Amino acid sequence: MSTEAAERNTQFAANSPRFADVVGPEPRLERLVDVDAHEGPAYVQAEDALYFTTVRAGSVSLKRLACATATVTVVLPDANNANGMTLDREGRLVICEQGSRTTPARISRLDLVTGLR
Image 1 (cartoon, one colour):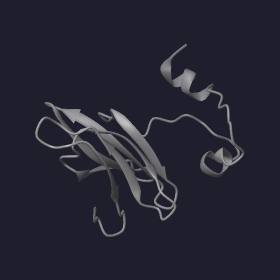
Image 2: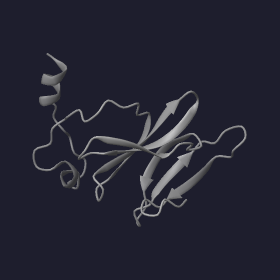
Image 3: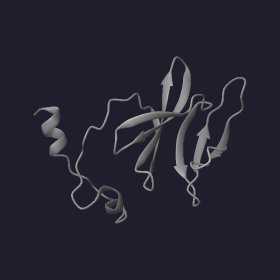
Image 4: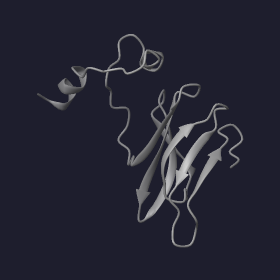
């Protein structure tokens, strides 16, 4: 079976009825863009965007995929080795940063409206 055929025949299993709020009544797997996604991810429904991290030459950056346009932008070029994130109740991105030998690990928040940490 081709990759395209496999993508059309993929079934989704939901552990929460709220999953339908994100994927709709007839979910399908669709390739939006080829990207160097590594960890994360966090979907922000209000933006229809997916936030994720990438690793390039030992540096981790935080990126945003606008799902409607399949546009990828860099949010934080140096994300302190971030490897996971979620949204808090106010809609801010909570980021788990592993740190490095020179920068301590931490949990940070990023306001997606103002860009402030």
